[in-house]
Length: 80
Image (cartoon, rainbow, N blue to C red; front, side):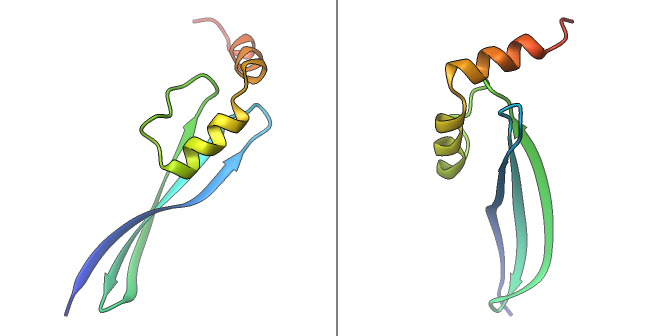
């Protein structure tokens, strides 16, 4: 019996305000067959550092997070 843990970005969504939602799937495989899966989601907001993200996420953020989108997103945030 061989167990393996695989993590993969399986969903990337861009929402109206320019935020990029990322879902990571963690699958436990036994002899090549998935026996378990869990999911984790996080958001990359316009203007946030995305340099540690998966290459696909980085490419999408680079295309979507234009200076105009970042400025609009930041202007819409409620001051603390």
